[in-house]
Image (cartoon, rainbow, N blue to C red; front, side, top):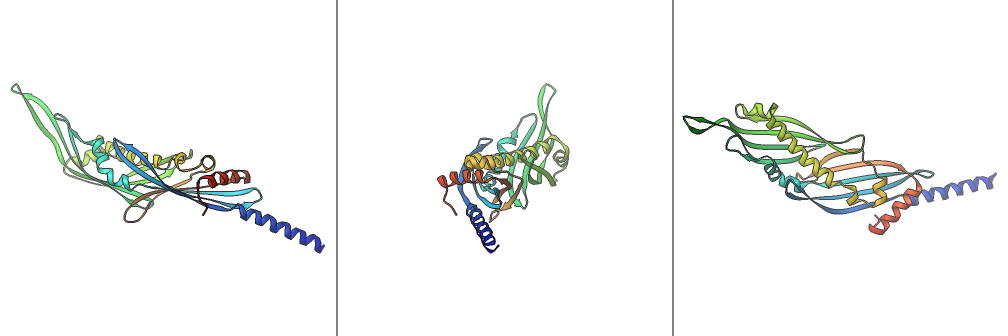
Length: 257
C-alpha cells in the first residue's frame, strides 16, 4: 500500500509540474497603427498581455488584455470634427467648430464641443437678392461615450448627451434638431473608428492568438496626464494543443516575460 501511495504522489507531482510548465505570460510590445479619419492622419499605439494558466488536465485559461493609446486622436479631435462639420453656405447653414476635447471619464470618455452656428435664408425683394440670418449663436455640447462588446464580439460605443449650453433657439437645434443628431453621430463615429482600427487583433496578435482570443469587456481609462486609453479584455478555455501552438508562435516573435 505504501508503494502504491508513493507512486500516486509522484505521478501527481509530475502532472502538476507539467501543468505549471505550460503557464506563461507574454507582453505584446507597442506597435503603431496609422489611420486616417476624415483625411486627418492619426496614429494609435497598441500593446497588450497574453497569459495562459493551467486549470486541470488538458484545460487551460487564456487571458488577453489589449490597450490602445488614443492620445493622438484626442489631439486631433478639433480638426477631425471641423473637416466633417464646418460649413459656410451663403443661403443655408454656417457651422464653425471652435474646439473639441476628449478626456477620460472612467470607464467612459467625455467629449466637449464648442461651436458657432448660423442659418441664413435668401430671397428676392424689389428685384434684389437679400440674405437674412434666421438663427445664430454659440453652443457647447457635452457627451459621455461608453464602450462595450456586442454578443457577436464587435465593439460598440454608446453616446449620451450630458449637457447643452446654447444661445437662443440654437439650444433646441442641438437638443432635438438635425444639427444635434449630426454632431452626436460624427463624434461617435470618429471615436468608434479609432477604437476598431486601433484594436485590430490581426495587427497586434500572432495567428494562433487571433483564432483563440476572445474579447468580452471594454472600457476607457486614464493612461496618465489625461491621456485616453481603450482597454479590452477577455478570457477563454483552451486545450493543451492550442497552448503549444500559441507558445510556438510567440517564441518566434516575442521575448518571454
